[in-house]
Amino acid sequence: MNSSSALSNILGGWNVNTITLLETGPYLTPTTSVSNDQTNTNPAAADVNVVRPDIVGNPIPAHRTNANYFNINAFANPPQGAGRVGTASVGSLEAPGTIAVNGGLAKAIAIRENWNLRFEATFTNVLNHTNFAPPTTNISNSASFGALTTAQTAESGGNRTGQVALRLDF
Image (cartoon, rainbow, N blue to C red; front, side, top):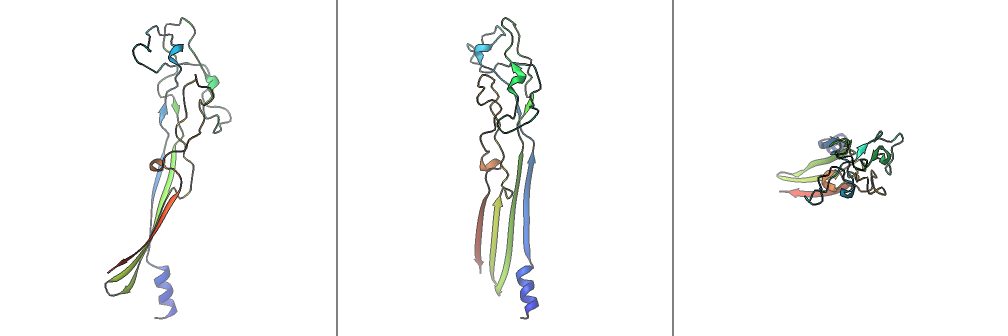
Protein backbone atom coordinates (compact mmCIF):
# COMPACT_ATOMS: atom_id res chain seq x y z
CA MET A 1 0.00 0.00 0.00
CA ASN A 2 1.48 3.36 -0.94
CA SER A 3 1.28 6.48 1.24
CA SER A 4 -1.32 8.07 -1.04
CA SER A 5 -3.82 5.21 -0.60
CA ALA A 6 -3.13 5.04 3.17
CA LEU A 7 -3.88 8.77 3.44
CA SER A 8 -7.00 8.26 1.33
CA ASN A 9 -8.16 5.46 3.66
CA ILE A 10 -7.70 7.70 6.70
CA LEU A 11 -9.17 10.92 5.32
CA GLY A 12 -11.82 9.50 2.96
CA GLY A 13 -15.11 7.73 3.58
CA TRP A 14 -16.34 9.73 6.56
CA ASN A 15 -20.08 10.13 7.13
CA VAL A 16 -21.20 13.40 8.68
CA ASN A 17 -24.76 14.09 9.78
CA THR A 18 -26.64 16.76 11.65
CA ILE A 19 -30.08 17.44 12.99
CA THR A 20 -30.76 21.11 13.60
CA LEU A 21 -33.68 22.45 15.62
CA LEU A 22 -34.61 26.12 15.28
CA GLU A 23 -37.82 26.75 17.15
CA THR A 24 -39.65 29.83 18.38
CA GLY A 25 -40.57 29.92 22.03
CA PRO A 26 -43.98 28.97 23.42
CA TYR A 27 -46.61 31.65 23.81
CA LEU A 28 -47.26 32.60 27.43
CA THR A 29 -50.08 34.40 29.21
CA PRO A 30 -49.37 37.02 31.89
CA THR A 31 -51.19 36.22 35.12
CA THR A 32 -51.73 37.65 38.59
CA SER A 33 -52.81 36.22 41.92
CA VAL A 34 -56.47 35.19 42.32
CA SER A 35 -56.61 37.60 45.27
CA ASN A 36 -56.38 40.42 42.68
CA ASP A 37 -59.43 39.18 40.73
CA GLN A 38 -61.85 41.94 39.70
CA THR A 39 -64.22 39.82 37.58
CA ASN A 40 -66.62 39.20 40.49
CA THR A 41 -66.68 35.52 39.51
CA ASN A 42 -64.71 34.19 42.51
CA PRO A 43 -62.18 32.09 40.54
CA ALA A 44 -60.67 30.71 43.75
CA ALA A 45 -63.98 28.98 44.59
CA ALA A 46 -64.14 27.53 41.06
CA ASP A 47 -60.61 26.13 41.51
CA VAL A 48 -59.31 28.46 38.79
CA ASN A 49 -55.81 29.74 39.43
CA VAL A 50 -55.47 32.07 36.46
CA VAL A 51 -56.38 35.74 36.57
CA ARG A 52 -55.06 38.13 33.94
CA PRO A 53 -53.67 41.61 34.66
CA ASP A 54 -54.11 44.76 32.60
CA ILE A 55 -51.43 45.59 30.07
CA VAL A 56 -50.30 49.20 30.53
CA GLY A 57 -47.05 49.33 28.54
CA ASN A 58 -44.64 47.46 26.32
CA PRO A 59 -43.91 44.00 27.78
CA ILE A 60 -40.56 43.86 25.93
CA PRO A 61 -37.95 45.89 27.84
CA ALA A 62 -35.79 48.37 25.93
CA HIS A 63 -32.66 46.47 27.03
CA ARG A 64 -33.61 42.82 27.32
CA THR A 65 -31.44 40.71 29.63
CA ASN A 66 -31.78 37.25 31.17
CA ALA A 67 -32.90 38.86 34.43
CA ASN A 68 -35.39 41.13 32.62
CA TYR A 69 -36.74 39.19 29.65
CA PHE A 70 -40.25 40.64 30.16
CA ASN A 71 -41.03 44.10 31.56
CA ILE A 72 -43.06 43.72 34.78
CA ASN A 73 -43.88 47.46 34.67
CA ALA A 74 -45.97 46.80 31.56
CA PHE A 75 -48.62 45.09 33.69
CA ALA A 76 -50.91 46.16 36.54
CA ASN A 77 -53.73 44.59 38.45
CA PRO A 78 -57.19 45.68 37.21
CA PRO A 79 -58.61 48.58 39.22
CA GLN A 80 -60.62 47.77 42.33
CA GLY A 81 -64.26 47.10 41.43
CA ALA A 82 -63.56 46.96 37.67
CA GLY A 83 -65.86 43.95 37.22
CA ARG A 84 -63.85 42.69 34.24
CA VAL A 85 -60.98 40.45 33.15
CA GLY A 86 -57.57 42.08 32.73
CA THR A 87 -56.66 43.37 29.27
CA ALA A 88 -53.49 41.25 28.85
CA SER A 89 -54.43 38.72 26.21
CA VAL A 90 -53.88 34.98 26.26
CA GLY A 91 -50.55 34.05 24.64
CA SER A 92 -49.40 37.67 24.35
CA LEU A 93 -45.83 36.90 25.47
CA GLU A 94 -43.34 34.74 23.61
CA ALA A 95 -40.72 32.80 25.57
CA PRO A 96 -37.21 32.37 24.17
CA GLY A 97 -36.83 29.85 21.40
CA THR A 98 -34.60 26.82 21.05
CA ILE A 99 -31.46 26.49 18.94
CA ALA A 100 -29.95 23.01 19.02
CA VAL A 101 -27.48 21.55 16.54
CA ASN A 102 -26.78 17.85 16.97
CA GLY A 103 -24.09 16.17 14.93
CA GLY A 104 -22.44 12.88 14.21
CA LEU A 105 -19.33 11.57 12.56
CA ALA A 106 -18.73 7.96 11.48
CA LYS A 107 -16.26 5.93 9.48
CA ALA A 108 -16.07 2.26 8.57
CA ILE A 109 -12.56 0.89 8.10
CA ALA A 110 -12.07 -2.41 6.28
CA ILE A 111 -9.57 -4.52 8.19
CA ARG A 112 -9.81 -7.68 6.09
CA GLU A 113 -12.52 -9.57 4.22
CA ASN A 114 -15.80 -9.43 6.21
CA TRP A 115 -14.12 -7.55 9.09
CA ASN A 116 -14.84 -3.85 9.57
CA LEU A 117 -13.96 -1.46 12.34
CA ARG A 118 -16.57 1.26 12.78
CA PHE A 119 -15.84 4.52 14.59
CA GLU A 120 -18.77 6.74 15.61
CA ALA A 121 -19.03 10.00 17.55
CA THR A 122 -22.34 11.76 18.23
CA PHE A 123 -22.99 15.02 20.06
CA THR A 124 -26.10 16.89 21.15
CA ASN A 125 -26.14 20.68 21.25
CA VAL A 126 -22.75 20.87 19.54
CA LEU A 127 -22.69 24.67 19.86
CA ASN A 128 -23.44 24.38 23.61
CA HIS A 129 -25.97 27.18 23.20
CA THR A 130 -27.94 27.81 26.40
CA ASN A 131 -31.64 27.30 25.72
CA PHE A 132 -33.73 28.74 28.53
CA ALA A 133 -36.98 27.34 29.89
CA PRO A 134 -39.95 29.75 29.82
CA PRO A 135 -39.85 32.36 32.61
CA THR A 136 -42.47 32.94 35.29
CA THR A 137 -45.27 35.21 34.06
CA ASN A 138 -47.17 35.85 37.30
CA ILE A 139 -46.83 39.57 38.14
CA SER A 140 -47.60 38.80 41.79
CA ASN A 141 -44.15 37.21 42.00
CA SER A 142 -42.05 40.24 41.06
CA ALA A 143 -38.77 38.62 42.14
CA SER A 144 -38.94 35.95 39.42
CA PHE A 145 -41.29 37.52 36.83
CA GLY A 146 -39.73 37.43 33.36
CA ALA A 147 -36.36 36.11 34.57
CA LEU A 148 -34.60 33.41 32.57
CA THR A 149 -33.11 31.24 35.31
CA THR A 150 -33.49 27.62 34.20
CA ALA A 151 -32.02 25.84 31.19
CA GLN A 152 -34.14 23.48 29.15
CA THR A 153 -33.81 19.76 29.66
CA ALA A 154 -31.61 17.62 27.41
CA GLU A 155 -34.64 16.51 25.36
CA SER A 156 -35.28 20.13 24.37
CA GLY A 157 -31.75 21.38 23.77
CA GLY A 158 -29.98 21.18 27.11
CA ASN A 159 -26.23 21.01 27.71
CA ARG A 160 -23.82 19.55 25.18
CA THR A 161 -23.36 15.80 25.51
CA GLY A 162 -21.32 13.38 23.46
CA GLN A 163 -20.46 9.77 23.03
CA VAL A 164 -17.76 7.94 21.13
CA ALA A 165 -17.95 4.30 20.05
CA LEU A 166 -15.65 1.83 18.34
CA ARG A 167 -17.22 -1.35 17.02
CA LEU A 168 -15.78 -4.42 15.33
CA ASP A 169 -18.12 -6.06 12.81
CA PHE A 170 -17.19 -9.59 11.63
